[in-house]
Length: 120
Image (cartoon, rainbow, N blue to C red; front, side):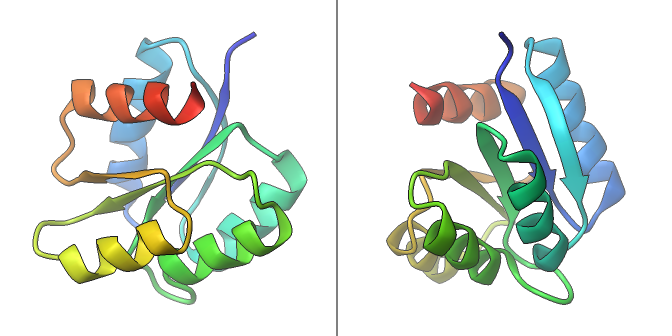
């Protein structure tokens, strides 16, 4: 059975890009969210195998959403996505329980490698 992945990013084209990479590689999309608040709600509904989570978003940022998800689901697998130069945030994310992080602009093979590693 294909692993189900929740894609979280405030930019629709970024979600589309990730969705494209994932579906081409045989993953199923559990849902999409454009902010952290929605991500937390969708996680509860869908309980996906993995989440790709943008860091900088309106309403609730990715690190806050990560912490909320991890508080309720300690085994949640989350990979953070960040633009260049957000190193401090990446450290915060890893400390908060993120499995890995991928840097934008995405390289398909790096995305898949991070996901396979997090799911194994």
